[in-house]
Image (tube, rainbow, N blue to C red; front, side):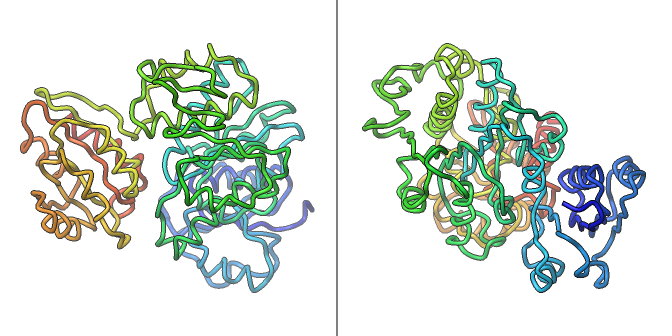
Length: 445
């Protein structure tokens, strides 16, 4: 890469900040542009001290032209953004910070990429914890909240990079390649961003880009749509399943998670419960076994791994009412899994950004739901859904109001579950902020 070329970073946030720093360290002339004026002041000052130009508050028509070598785009920004469309006209590549970082990775780094509609964060976290426990030189990065660019200067030959990879990130990759890729499952999500389910699925398939027989694909044998999607990939395929034990890398046999038919751990010893979590654990086992990890290390981690923040996270018990934070449930399938985890009477907090998706697929999971509290942009459609299926529903404006109503409407032995089935962006910056605010509201009760 030439050190005289210009690069346009579209979107600040954590990924834009780290991408800009990496580019400046490589001698590039960098412009960062973000429509939001509210940014981390210290980060802005740091970038400016590196000679980086920062333009905030708008996307001026004349700011981007054909003199740039590439755009490094924040994954959350639409691929129909005017600068992205201009880039296509100018044949300027549009990549993201993950692709940028990959181009500077040292030779010899093993890359593990985990994607899927649900279970990405849990699976990635288990893989990392097991490899760390096994004394591997391993780094945890990606969509989990740690930009890949921030690790480039630390990585060396024989290190392992464990990445959570989202469909938004896979939109703008060119050379990016993993050594081991996991696809946990598929269900409809982010259709407002991609335009169709087929496009979304094909973005997920890019986790296997540039694979050969020497690369490994870890696949969910129980997901027929996933198997169809990956039928023609070049990877060596390994499987996990919670319902079949035929010729699998990882399966459940007689109440044990097994690897190649050898018992690893009894299900009742696994701290995180539920079929979906057993599948996440099996996917992780299939990965770490490719790297030679002993069973005793795997068992030690699975006995103590308590789950991921904002994913069916226990918050507090007040007057024998249990509060759970599942803010990471931004789609219907995630909420289905959360509801399946509880046999107690449940009050469900549902709502957020209205993407127009149907809530009807929740109907078979509402057997224990005594009340839905609907809030946010999608509250009226949720109320219509609840009325159609005879579930009591209360409509409020904010998550704080929803939390208070849920508490006052519950009785001893109830579960109050935030599992919104919607993105957070109508009222919150991201699902993490939403989950943290919910925990604050619970702690104030």
